[in-house]
Length: 231
Image (cartoon, rainbow, N blue to C red; front, side):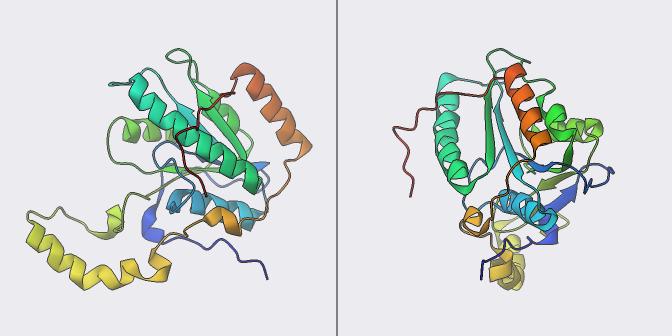
């Protein structure tokens, strides 16, 4: 019996917009913007769960912008090495992976919306820092389908508490009362959700869309993974 990708805790999922899920879409789209990994990743697990439930192929878009504050060669090298690992793992799992690296500020504008046009829904990373909250909110206003942001930031969901703790002691007391639920098997992400994924072939319509998008927004062709380790 094939193991299925299980649902993640509801506390980790946030609806960004009021748009509905489109069951007749050609694919599920995962917009990977913060949790850029294939292991121990609630956001990717949630995308795989939806794709499996809807019996649709999964498309993962991992973009890298160039026009953000503190952008540097060092930062981009770090992300590109991770993209190389992700490309290999997604290819092995039969997931369509789109590593898009901007060659100039704003070059990637419109790519997400184009990929979401025929999607069942879009999932992304719910990250509370930097420019990401504004970017996610903006995308939610523009996308024609449901956008769900998923918290894969740490052991405790961001929504598990309704206030900030003024001291480490007060947080520790709260954690000791609630740790059992968060650390239970259901409260932890799958180590490798791709291992439970059954690949689905893209339809002719999706293949055509991907071909047109790659012509307009060429994906990264060379990813340096000499320094990366992969099992």
